[in-house]
Length: 277
Image (tube, rainbow, N blue to C red; front, side, top):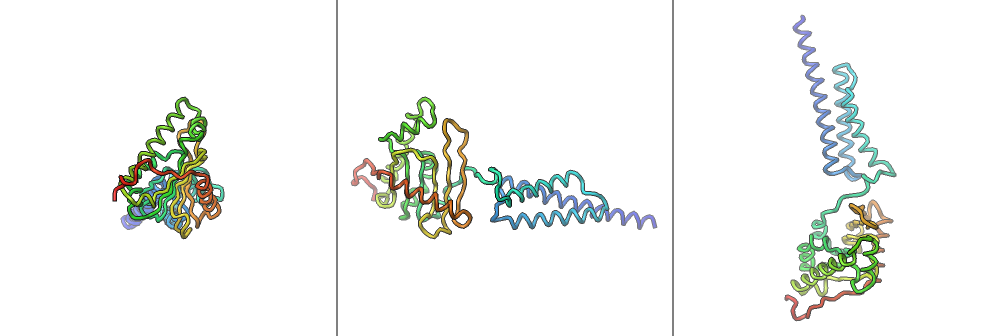
């Protein structure tokens, strides 16, 4: 009789531990998954499914063991619900809004038209030079906006950071950017018709990385980087799509168009006869 009772207690204990282990593993997965690739409204359904599973496991464990949920498990589930609430909150924290520097190659690879705007864009063009060259080779349009080194924009950009030698810094950076753009021209004769470069008479207060802005808006994407004044560790960035952010998507798309109308069209200082055909 006692052996049968002990067996029932043992099975009950094993089932209770199993439910706890499954709960912990699911909770750990949610936390790690959020750190690697934060949950958004687009994949909220997956997160809610996991939360329901966690709650079910907790309830099962509690019923089997006839005991209260441990403090550690309660802390994990509370943290998980915090993740969900931060995504559902109409006024989320900056951590849920701002993003890290995006990997642009996949967007450049798939976009029919590419729009890049910044003070000098040296790092952006340098890091994605091959992808931009391939876009031009494929006959896709590339629009680039940078400041005009022959205007006061260079001095204003230097004053904005307010650091000694910044004017020369931007001058050097722009020279590098121009060299990279001329290299694209030299490598492909299509660049004369597909690579468009505008020089702004003022430094923009934000950078724009846009893709397919004048086609089907549902396919468009905009990354905005807010430039700091003086010296900052990292500029805040955010992502816009027409479906989720229609008004602001349209606003920044129009901002690019307006700045383009202020720009002086740049042409390479190389003879057309030297262009590769």
